[in-house]
Image (cartoon, rainbow, N blue to C red):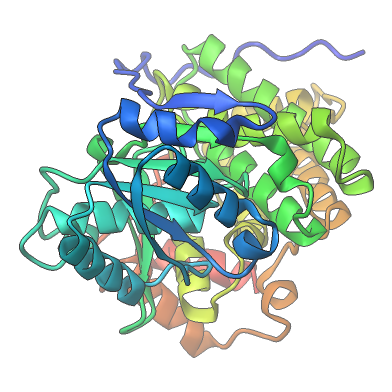
Amino acid sequence: MQLRITNTKHLRIMKDFNYYAPTEVVFGKESEEQVAHLIKKYDGHRVLVHYGGQSAKRSGLLDKICRLLDEGGVFHTELGGVVPNPRLSLVHKGIQLCKEQQIDFILAVGGGSVIDSAKAIAYGVCYEGDVWDFYMRKAEAKACLPVASVLTIPAAGSEMSEASVITNEDGDIKLGYSNNISRPKFAIMNPERTYTLPPYQTAAGVTDMMMHTMERYFTHDGDMDLTTAIAEAVLRTMKDNIFYVLRNPEDYRFRAQIMWGGSVAHNGLTGCGIHDDWATHQLEHELSGMFDVTHGAGLAAIWPSWARYVYKEDVSRFVRFAVNVMDVPNDFADPEGTALRGIEAMERFYHAIGMPINIHELIGREITDDEIKEMVRKCSRNYSSTCGCFKVLQAEDMEKIYQMAK
């Protein structure tokens, strides 16, 4: 067995931090039975039940939630129709409905897209302008309705995070907004509710939660060993457990590891004391905004090219990832070779779980140079903004990464 690497090149002193994770997690079998009690505990009286497509109805979960609310004496109305890469038009519809029905609490029944849409509605109800102002950085949210979730798709980690990502159909612009006031009051997590997830969706979800961890892991901060060790544990656990789940979708033990892993990956714990990156996410947002692809699959298509473009900024960090996460033997005489073999091992992992490793595999055709230039324009906010921290990416860097990922 290899010795794990426990230190890397120290370039910065540990970042001061506040860790804030106020969401109450109710985890386990039949945990949704507590939904009415929890809503009343957090002063909810008139509830919008927000959900996605027909799966929530077919599974019987939506009917069960509504029945439990009725039995608990909690008024509720429903709004479905959330799709992957949730749309601003439905958010506007939800805001209007909440105002008409005097809604004071939003319950998301679904995955990250539903929770993100619920957060956007919650902001908009308490704001006189257009909620899109927050995502465009034209305003800062001062209030929002309380939000909670009954999680059915572990991936985005939105059930415990402050983040929300919305797509504006006018221009296919996908933007995120983060504010602690939107952190959900509670998250109900029953791993049994994930048994019917298709393999592709399960794999894309694990890719997303691993990337949430990796966006924080690839940092120049070498002083926060505990945070780094927690991140490595999350990555190894997700990497190993996905294969058990793909073989046996109804294995409660491994479904539970993945469900909890999605929350830990994005509740801030793996970012304590470090400067995080998020370049891969920002680059991918333009892919899913333009082509409406699955977010996790888009991340897999971009990350290998980002990694090869930036790894020389701190080879030792990529060596640590290769050895401690991907089980690559450490060639002490060739650190760059070890780092690159770690990236290659990640590509093999993506293929093994059915994920793409480039844009051609993602969208099924060659992306054009004009499409790349348009994504660069949007990602750089008309060439006025950078992204990333591990390596700060200018517009020309973004274009090179997209070209590498073709």
